[in-house]
Image 1 (cartoon, rainbow, N blue to C red):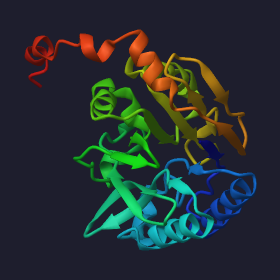
Image 2 (image 1 turned 60 degrees about the vertical axis):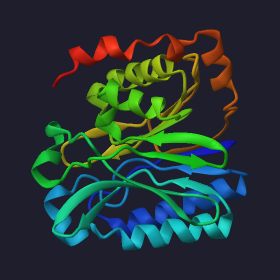
Image 3 (image 1 turned 180 degrees about the horizontal axis):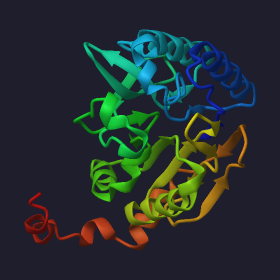
Length: 264
């Protein structure tokens, strides 16, 4: 599958600019033959958390219409990174995934809120997993800080995911953690990891991209630069079955042994 990773310089508190930029980059990817497009985290507003009442997408209406129309008209799958949304009276960091018919196949609210960027003060955490099928590929999707919780990603792999999509706004100061953790998650779960980070800056953080595609054996197939870019990578998902056959980690697990250790 030809996968386009859109490493976007997200404009702070400027949804109009960001929607236009995403549309232009998706159309460019389509012209180059992309079958699947992956976006970064909170690409509609960035971390303008104090302005969510004015900026967040009410019930995700605008984002869902936007992604659905692009997916349907161009016959592409879209892992929509995430956007700030308002559902009822609460705000969320939400991922939408569309198939190439323009159908919504998954909706996920970030499960682990990042205190260092004040998410817990403004957002509500999600309470369900994110498993979906793109074409014939079983996939999982989590968001940024979720990466630091290996048990959460393993739960998605145990549910059948052969690829984990991870959109992010991961700051430059901890970018080494980002790269090591992504590679570890690919190796330990024997799956592809496709992670798309943003670039640019907001009032409190500098972001330097370095999005990654990592194969289940741990090989890095692509690393993004530090500025805005779009990359098209051809991924062969059959490699997952080969790696899981060579080292049968899933068959050798002993869940009954682990459970007493995870009471909390």
